[in-house]
Structure formats: C-alpha cells, structure tokens
Image: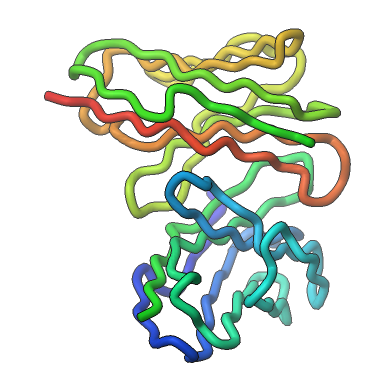
Length: 112
Length: 113
C-alpha cells in the first residue's frame, strides 16, 4: 500500500513564525497535493505539484508556498503564520490524474 | 462550475441500523466517483471507486451506487457499528487534466450505542 507520511500530527506556532509542513510518499507518485480542511468548508486545494520542481496554485494559495526538490517530498511553507491559518492540513499523492488520492494522516496546526 | 453536494450534513443512528448517504454532482466530463471515510483527526481513506459503467460496488458492509444519468451516488451502510462514526466524503473526478477532483463537504455520521 502507498504510504503518505506527514511529519507532525499536531503543531502549535506563534503568529509571524515561518512554518514548514512536510509530506513524504513512498510509491514514486508523480502528483502531490496540499489541502486544508475547515468545518463547513470541506477540503480546499492550496497547491499541487505534478513533477519535481513544478508547482501549481490551487484555490487558496495566498499566504502559502511549496517546495518539491525531490519526487517523494512535498513541503508546504507558511511564510508568516497567521491565526486564520489554524486548520487541519492534509497531504495527498496520486499516481496520475485518473486515479484517486492516498491521503496522509493530517497535521492539525494551531497558530496563536 | 463543478460541484458536489452531499446530504444529509449530519446523521445519528443507533448501532445495528442501516443508513444511506447521498451525493449529487455536476462534474463534467465525468471520470470516476470515490467515497472516502475520514475518522476524526485523521486523513480520509478510500472506501470505493466507481467509473461511468458501474452501478454498484461493495466493500464489506459499505455499498455504493452510481446513477450516471441523474448524476447521483449513494453510500449504504449495513448493520452499523460504533466504528462507522466518521465523516464520509464524496469525491468526483473530471477527465480534464490538472486539479480535476471536486470534493463534497461530507456527511458526519454518529453511530450511537
């Protein structure tokens, strides 16, 4: 089975801090995604990547950036964390765009 | 605009009872539809995937149906267990290139003893 590992289950950061959320997948998948999930809003796409060093903006990229230096790793960066970025962050990988996702366990980020 | 609507938003049932969750979509061109189960504080896990030509697919006590003509899907849970308490998310894939998945907001199911 594909495994998607997110480095932290829970994080608490201060406003203004730079935050790195790491995601690693072990099945050589081409596509990787970052979502945030908020009550009543469902999953919203932040960024995705379809190849190393490639990235595309999703629906809500403002305040975020990403890095994909290696195929197996996709990092989400909050340059200056704000309280409205408190959320559950989900990473997913996909072998190609015709297949479903395998999700990580999620990172619950709280910005205080 | 592609959309996926799920109903009900939330549901409480007694352990051992059956229930059915609904998903209506307006996604084009349709590729496939998945149901995910998401336990509280965890990432979603795939239950079933259905393509255009499939009407019914089962995974244990979970049975998904798809009516591509009316653009509706349902997830039926039989003989519910406490461990079925979770959010169930319907996700529809369009066959149109990047970022092709449209997510429903989920149905929160609580199975009560």
